[in-house]
Length: 510
Image (tube, rainbow, N blue to C red; front, side):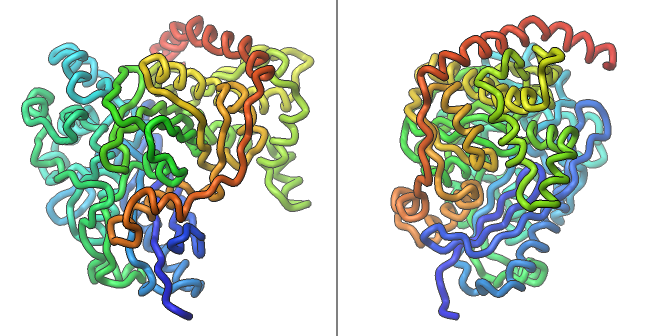
């Protein structure tokens, strides 16, 4: 086999680790997905074990190398992306001291209330560009100090998901700039930590690793990691970045106004901007591309909502898929196509794990509204798709109201494989949607970072030109968009009418 230039992208997702080896033109030549468990020990607690992520990386690389499609010597660099808002407590030996409360975790709400009152929500937001909410990193660290003091006193570093894997590979401690948005002592305008705010919040600044550009080489695969993974010792590893930001890069979004539409476990959007623009209803972070920010809308009800429905209500489709081949999700698509736009009045609120932007309500609940004896599962499937698209429209409307212009969207994630769902999103938002040729945009973005950092690509523009191509464009229909306006109005009104009942139910333990 002639030696080629390959790049490894590692994606530490919510449900699984995806590892993909790409050629420098973006062609996938090997991949693995290794799942791990999420634990829900108490209401509001959502945890994972970071060592499970590392085990998945080791297993996945070994299995890919065993297939023989590439050699370890061909990998020119490794990029890692990961879920945001981790708070991985590690001691000086690199041991994990407590489970990681992932981005869905809301246990630290009371700490946020306390800090917003004592310091001032406006002052915190003015520095960090983000509201202080329990899903972010800040309050999770303080929760650890208050409730697990034995672990906290041993903590040397608080790591992010991709930084943790980079440490396991190289022994180097790092944090990339795109993950800085999780900490409210991070100065979003200047891209650095603010020591005064660290003290005000009660955070130990020594626990926060040094910040690196996302494409910076932070270390090389060490001998121990080489033995565990099969990778070649000395292979460069870059800092990597937030999964949503890497997905945005992997979709080819590098210029202001370009926007990624996220269709993974979570839903949402990322608008590339070149001027600081913050709004407390949205999420602001640095792009993995230098000198750019991403104004983001992050929702809990993306592809995960459809996976929930498939798991609980699609026994027939799973059986048909096993007997005849194909996918149960494709069969659900066909079912939804039987129903007209607007689902004959059925509306779905996709708040199956509370909701993030723009309503920021951890007590929000999923709702199907408009059911009667004439409605079928087909109505429910289509309403689910439309509800996720309504949440996207809500976020886009907020972003555009504060001056973040959006032309068209670039869809990523598994949901982008559904032509129906993509068309629904185009029609509901009134935006054309471009679908890149690979549905592996997230690990591709991580691999691009490795390519730029190691000199495989001279610039991000060159990297995107070589690796990203648009497979199809789905045009929005003004007529269909108008037809969805009624459903969108009901969607918005339902939450406003039900939010107090949702809060009351939570207090009563429902």
